[in-house]
Length: 334
Picture 1 (cartoon, rainbow, N blue to C red):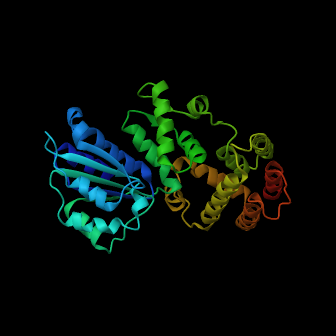
Picture 2: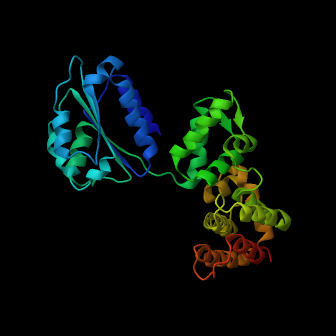
Picture 3: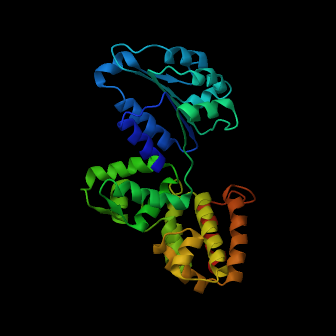
């Protein structure tokens, strides 16, 4: 995020590079930088003749170079943006000759999503020397709630830990999807609002009471009644609550609980750091550790491995997912 801010700050100062090569697994920041350049480098009246968007599936590297070598018309510079440039992965290294002698009045933006170019080769080294190579790495799931918090704080909103966890559970680590839902919330909620689970439920449609987060908590508390109520809800709404996701999240929880049992220092700050969780959730692990001793947790981890395979249709004899989940809960809570 800091790299993105620096790139944008440099462009605002007029420190514009001839080539921006934006690559990596997380498309959100690639789009953010590319869109900023597309919307801000040229004035509106300059864009008609001097801004061009190309797509990797429709062009060859030679065509990109040909367009990049054009001179701007009645403007200081032109902007050439290549989207979906990963479709040119087999020939992208041919761009190296242009990178050795780029047109100084052209801003060439290459959006190379979900892939990376070889950092040992000449293209990477040359663009790094004269332009910007930005690598957008996928965020690990445990980092996404903090990303949500930082994005919202810059827009004068806050969010409760449970609400951010609900978004991550429902939307995964796709930052573009998460940002789209945050934009919807900002339309209906005034600045200064703390976004709560109730806001998520009312405006996005994620149940605040019947979700994997609440199921995990109920299991940790050995609250069988609540756990089976959630399982029944999942059984009635299987498309929104796939078994394979539930098993994956429970596996992560009990693996972390096993780690918790092995910690010598169970100070909340150390637990949060060691398990890579928000300090808000530490008490859940303390409670679960009391209810599930280490030997029991080890057994549950093995059970979850078995049910992970079953949730994917192996050796389950077409058992409905809801019934599988109930069987899993019986084994965990027995």
